[in-house]
Every structure is written in C-alpha cells, then in structure tokens.
Length: 324
Ligand code: NDP
Image (cartoon, rainbow, N blue to C red; front, side, top):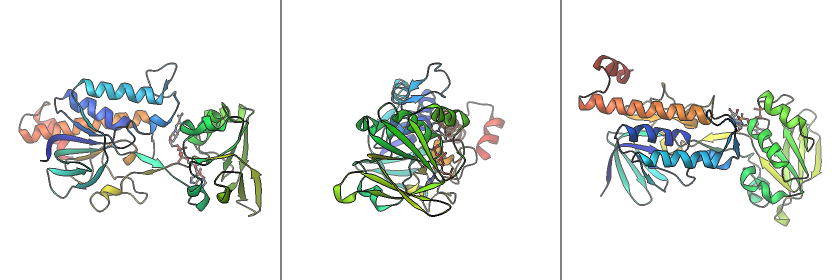
C-alpha cells in the first residue's frame, strides 16, 4: 500500500534538510527521500568556512549530520533510497522508489547537482584509478604524488589547496587566463608554494588506459593548439555541476542548462516546490540552499493550510502568497 504524506522532500542536502526542519516544526511530519548520497554535496567537502554561525568553520559531514539530527528531532521520517519515478500530472503527486510508492499533497524537490566530467574516454576508464571528482574522498591516496586539478572555480582552487596536504605538487589547469573563483581563493592557492598553474590549457587526454592507472596528462594550449605532456599520478576534475533533474524532464519547466525554473521556490506546478542547487544556477551556496529550503517548506505549509481553510497567517496575506 502506498504511503500517504502531506509533504515529501526529495534530497537531503542543505536545502532538503532545512525544508524538513521547518515542515516538521509545522507538524507536517515530512518524509525525506534521502537519495543514495545522504547529506548532499557537503558530505564530500572538508572545511566549510562560509556557513554562518561557525566562527572557526565546520567540517561538511559534521554540519550535515547535525542538520539531519535536527530534522529527525522534530519528527521527520527518512527513506534511504532514490526516487525512480515521479508523476506530477495530478495532485496528490506520486513518487516511486525501488521498494514503495508515496502519495503526497506537496513535493519539495532538493535533488541538488552532480559533478560534471570532461567527457573524454580516459576519464571514464580511469575513474577510481587515479582520476577523481572528489579531492576530499580520494586526496589521501595521493601522498607525495604529482596531481593535477582541472577547473578555475572555487571548487578547483579549494581542492588544489586541500590536496597539498598530501601531494608533492598540485598543478591547476584552467582553460582561461582569469579565474571564476573568488579572489580570496585565488590568493590562497597562489600563496601555497606546492600549487602551480597552467592557464589557457585544456585536457586533451589522460594516460594510461592500458595500464589501468594515471601516468601522465596531455594538455592542449587553447590558443596555439600545441600539445604538451606531463607526468601525473592523479587528475581531479573540478569543473562544476549538473543539476539532478532527469526525473522531472517533460513534467516541470527546466532552463536550457537543465535547472528547474522557479518563481521564488514555486515551480510551474502548484504544490511542487524546488529549493537549493537544483534550481539555483547562480549562488549555489549551502546557506542559500538552506534559505530556499526554509522558504519551500513555508510555501508548502501555507498552501496546505489555505486549502484546509485554516491559514496560520492573516487570510489576505495567505491568499496573496499562495496565488502568486
Ligand atoms: P564553477 O561553475 O564556479 O566553476 C567551474 C570551473 O570549471 C570554471 O572555471 C570553468 O571554466 C571550468 N570548466 C567548466 N567546464 C569545463 C570544461 N569542460 N573544461 C575545462 N574547464 C571547465 O563551479 P565550482 O564547482 O567551482 O563552484 C560552484 C559554486 O560553489 C560557486 O558558486 C562557488 O563560489 C561555490 N563554492 C564555494 C566554496 C567556498 O566558499 N569555500 C568552495 C567551493 C565552491 P570557465 O571559468 O572558463 O567557465
């Protein structure tokens, strides 16, 4: 028999768990379908220095564990599974996991985004054999090794600095002259004498598939097309993220780059809200994800209350909010 819920949340990163805290505290007994990487992207980072309230920073996994316990404390239920199918064609909505069906009055989508890859064959074949998309997970394996980090954003530079804890040398390869990363991260990387930069270059290939390990990297000069080859033990890809929206294609309005289109946190379907990186191509921060998770839970609460005829805020305000 299907489980019946008022509020179901897909995803358990900052956005999903904050939505759960708010929905649980509104006595809506939310259900969180956690996905197969509970805690989201912060569980694969180390120091989080920009989340307000932690003067000395906090480890990403610790922050998410605390947030999960906070959501559980107010009565959130959790399912350790992925949603494999959603039907948003009528309310209540239907969600299917590998073992059950959930029927829900409102749905808050917080499925986040996943690391992008370069799309070359060697990267796929050598993933886990010297190629990685997560310095936090794999950095330890590169003690006294020669590693390359691909990308010019905050993630690339943060990972480069993190990898200097283990590696002999870390080379950042970026396809342009200027960085997308914030100046503070660029300075930190530049001041670290283990970090080297190769700018205006792209990855042409990674050696050596036949040996099933990384032995070198071929880079192409983006201007002259000249190929150079360097010895390497590891290659970390840090070129951004892809929103996890495959489940919603054809059902919800998406941007050209695949993000869910929202007005605030409202999607194109009444009763379906989206929060966090799955709908935010611009800010993509843990704290903005948490903020939008809070907003989504409040919107779901107000919608349900106005439909049940007992809004918790003055009727005029509630009507105005839910009709926007
Ligand atoms: P970004 O999208 O900011 O940066 C991706 C980088 O990868 C860009 O420099 C981009 O180049 C490059 N790139 C993209 N595709 C390719 C490709 N096919 N080949 C080569 N290079 C490529 O992603 P991040 O993951 O770095 O950051 C995401 C968000 O998270 C940002 O808002 C960032 O500020 C935040 N963040 C904050 C941290 C902190 O505060 N400590 C730590 C980590 C992330 P180009 O610039 O040319 O487009």
